[in-house]
Length: 169
Length: 132
Image 1 (spheres, helix red, strand yellow):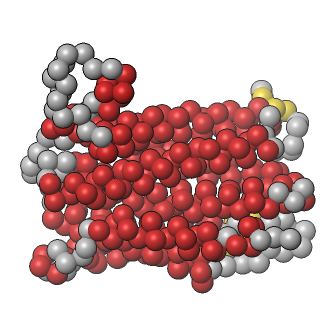
Image 2 (tube, one colour):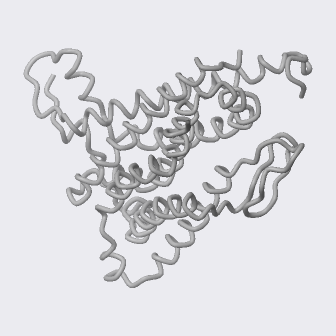
């Protein structure tokens, strides 16, 4: 594949933009699920008399049911991100360094470390949620969920800012 | 609407399932703890199980330098692969421990180590923060 030349039916920039959008869509789903879960474990709804407001409904989700979906979406987002990272490393990072955006580059490297550490937490996260009836795991489940949620927001924001710095399209 | 915490946040009891197995518990806790530690060690000692050279689409085992005319070298894939391999082996070995010994692995480490890893990761990236 050559930069800018058509490959079969779509151009190279379009090809990578599609993958970037897939990465974005998966991450948005992940962000929503993890944010619902994190809010539900940090501010659980004890009892509501009458119709609840937006915030109450936001945290009154069946959070345990999100666990497997979150694991699958984290892995898929990770795999797609790893794939487009190849393009980033050769076509985006080098100009970023040449332009002297050192802190921007630092945040991207931080992002990759956070994504990997989040990946190794997933089996434990899934286990804690599948045993949500066991109070032994309450603290661990709450903390791991909040950590993954904060990590996901960080990954999302850094990715978004980097795309604005030098987007594919 | 009458919603309780139990109704919204708790799963059904995972009886006789994968999630209720003591060995699975040992594996996932060990995987998380060893995985976080291994990733930080991989960064510190630079232990990728392979190096990828994207410009020439070449993979070489373990650490390899970027070569002139071949573009940059990528180590993150290798660090992550090292981490997954080591933590999977450690998790499997932990399941072979007697149940009493396996129960002594502190669950708190699952979430405490990632928090403690953050300052180390920031320090590890100091070349970017303090680049002239």
